[in-house]
Image 1 (cartoon, rainbow, N blue to C red):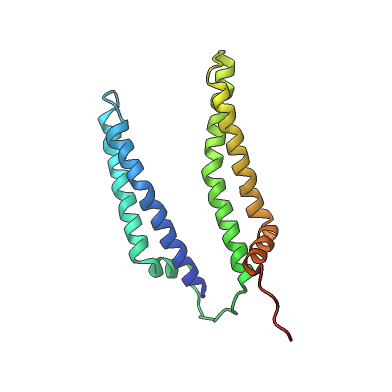
Image 2 (cartoon, rainbow, N blue to C red):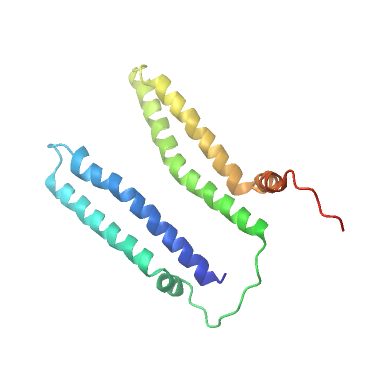
Length: 170
């Protein structure tokens, strides 16, 4: 695959990710905002929702245009074919990055809430928050393992894929 094709695939993945998160954002705009919310903030949220929808559609329908604009090259050189281990390593690293970006904000927020609730003396939330923090720490650890040391995962994957298959005689 050329670099433009790789970026085009990633642009489409970003479009899918944005589209998946749009219903949750629409719910927050319509239902979660109570009567005490300022209407100018609701209008701002609706404009942001529409812009995100347009960006998602543009990324889905024009991924190669985005890729060509991001990767301007003076010459088109055919890259050598990549091995399956390289693609698996990149996939593990991307999954690890995804997991890290979803777990780290929750870990920071819950740790901050736990710290402020201990200062205020409310202990009823602390056990639930501690369990959530342990869960987020485990997610961050798995994400770091996938990003930094995915070689062990690759070995397990290739072992499971070829388990039970005898080698052909040479």
